[in-house]
Length: 370
Ligand SMILES: Cc1cc2nc3c(=O)[nH]c(=O)nc-3n(C[C@H](O)[C@H](O)[C@H](O)COP(=O)(O)O)c2cc1C
View (cartoon, helix red, strand yellow):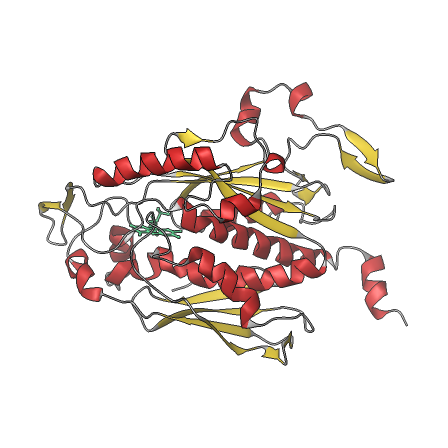
């Protein structure tokens, strides 16, 4: 299977299936000399861990990180960093029926159409469990970003029809609050409303979707390549590659279609002797290149496809059937995906920072001039 790798200079390849012995990632291109231990990665994995709250799959996994290579005495060596996370809570029997039919909204039919053969246990490679490996990769990228004073955070903006008011931006919220919330909302009263909405969904054996916002601060101006590897294009690919993401917005996103140019344009201004934009409708990216202002994006997630309600579908014998899905599923993907969006954003920015280093002869001279 191709398409398991992401990145140009900083590259990651994820491997493993939901119900195999382990999942993992190989990260190549990480510069040497960066502090990296299990303790830097584990907190990110803990945020994604299943079974952590009532709105996540009851599958319980320790998701303990094992660094197999690329690190010596707590520092990266510049060689491939291999990270493994063992599966410890497989219950493959729950999924044997799925081998024979196609779940509406899931990847089963696509995999059969493409390969004619699939690891149906928990969705195999198309399982949300694959994201454990990307989170590990993102946590490694965060170590590089933190050396440069760049921070990346994400939080929940909407679950079903419960959402933060439009006038509340990432500048008005507390990330700490969102980290302590089972739904990932940064405002407790909104989070409680969302919990009620979710409980109703679960009572009806249904699922729902939502929106995650991610922002990166401290990204210097000039990051991103001007044509096919625009920063927004690569961020779009990174976020769209997460299962269940159906739309990605940068800055004001789809709102720009009803704005006037005079409302959407960000005036340039000088702050502390540096050129910046007075507003940030563009989400910190113009022409595919960072402006130096904060990068802002939103990921829109569809409802979890595996629901416990009866559904109509067909089986491999082309017979129409009625199904009731078993197994362990997230009634909402959003709270667990917050850290996934954060990590894919961090990885993309880290890769593009490294790509940018050869854009200008002065940068090259800084490295090679005696
Ligand atoms: C963190 C995470 C957890 C997920 N959990 C589930 C789940 O429990 N059950 C399910 O049917 N889909 C789950 N998904 C979504 C499926 O992986 C995804 O919908 C499926 O692969 C089909 O791909 P598509 O929705 O992008 O078209 C999850 C996705 C993510 C990112």
